[in-house]
Length: 304
DNA sequence: AAGAAGGTCAACCGCAACCCG
DNA sequence: TCGGGTTGCGGTTGACCTTCT
Image (tube, rainbow, N blue to C red; front, side, top):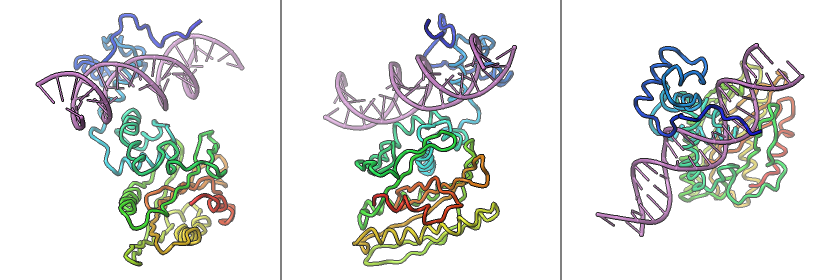
C-alpha cells in the first residue's frame, strides 16, 4: 500500500496565493494562534492544505520577516555557516532573525554558489576547485551529533601581488566583520577575540600581522588552549616554511574561535576558523587537553 | 520588437523526525 | 514499545521576470 498523502488534495487550491487568501490566513493566525496546521485551513476558510498554509505563513506572512536582499556581511556569514553546517538551511537560518531557510537556500543556489565559483572555490566542499581530497585530513568526520563536518584547508599562497590578492583581502575583511557571537541549537558559542593589526610593506606588498587577544574566553576556563593556540605566529611560520618564494607572498589572517559543548563538559571541542586572504581554514576537533603540536599535526600535512 | 536564454523565488513534494496516545 | 498523525526540512519545480541576441 502506498503512502498516504499529507492531506486530502481533492478540491484543494494550489499555486500562488491570492491577497484574499493571505488576509484570511493572517487574520486567523493573529487572532487564534497556531495549534494545529491541519485545522488552520478549515477554520480559516481556506481551500488549502495545512502544509501549504504553514509554508505561506513561515516564508511570507510572518510579521517578523526581514524583507530585502542579503547584505555582503550576511552572505559571508552564510558562507561561513555553510562551511560548518552544510545544507542544513534551517540551522543556518536560525542565525538570521527574520530570514527563512527557504530564502537562504534560494540565495545560496542563485547567488552565493556563483560567487564562490568565481573565487575558485567549490561551493560544496569550500575547497579550491580541482583540489582532490587525497589527504586523510580532508575527510568528512562525524561529531557526537552525527552531523557531518568537513576539515577544510585552502591556501592563498598563490595570491600574491595581483587583483586576486586585493579581492581576497577585501573578502577577508568582510569575513572578519561577519564573525559574530551566536547561540544556536547546536550549542556553539562563538567567541570573537579582540585583534591588534600591524601593517608594513615589503617590496611594495602590504603585509598584515594580526595578533589576537583571547581574554574573552578566560572567564570560562579555556585559557589553556587559548594561550597555546597562537594562530598568527604559527601560520606565519608555516606559510614561510612551505613556500620557498615566501618574499613574494602576502597573506593576512584572522581567527574566530568556537567552543562546542559536548556531553562531556570537561572535554569541549574547539572549533576555529582562520581566514587567510579570504580563504577559510576550519580547525575542528581539537581537544584542549591535547598538546598544541598534536592538535596541529594533521593541519601541517595538508596541502598548500 | 520579438523570441531565446538565463535568473529568481514562491511553492510543492516526499521523507524523516517528532509527538502522543 | 509501537504506530498513526503531525510537523519540519531540504530538494526540486515551474511561473514569472530580466537580459541578451
